[in-house]
Image 1 (tube, rainbow, N blue to C red):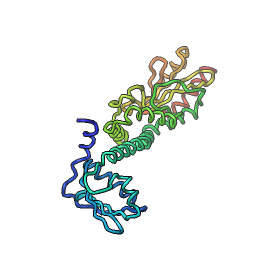
Image 2 (spheres, rainbow, N blue to C red):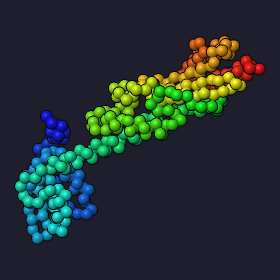
Image 3 (spheres, one colour):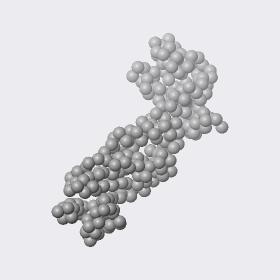
Image 4 (cartoon, rainbow, N blue to C red):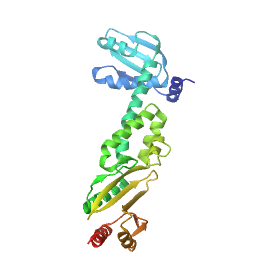
Length: 282
């Protein structure tokens, strides 16, 4: 089965009991007529058309499904737009292609708001708040490289770039594009979409700060399973600081890396970290 036949077969199956819809072709109803014509093109590509006319108008009947009443002064416009000039066999294949193209474009247009809203879920904003908290205590000297689909500090730009990548791969694949948008809206695991597997994380940042001449690196991420993680790395040579940190109950220390003993770091820990650094330096 060809791609065209497959697409056409998907749109079939509308009940034969459907009654005729009547619509007039006027400047104010051009959009509605176009929508109706798209609908019957999706039902089938070839139609037996009957045209009933009088001095003022022509009534174009597409079987028992649709009739379009066209005033004589608008007939040339209607005829050239839809390829209908006389009773008999009429092909709407070109119109079907237009309908399919418009639906694809609608899907493509839905991706940006879906992805933007996806990155506004609570766990993502929680991480953003955590980064703001870190900055309020230690500031930021620079951003370090991290392999994440979207970085916190370039969020808008990275989302737009990710959209471009996704459309390049899925923009002409109706099924996968629908699945992707549905997965984003329902917060499903995205590992079935290969692009997301190119990254270590869905969202995050890695930041260098220097406090009292001691470099400290904060990393906050959300992975493909929506797990939020945080860590702080200090120079391995700062053994006294590491030992003092290991005595705290609200963190876990592994070598020179500190992890929260709980969901996230809190203000109390950041105050303790600042004070410990001061003690070690002084």
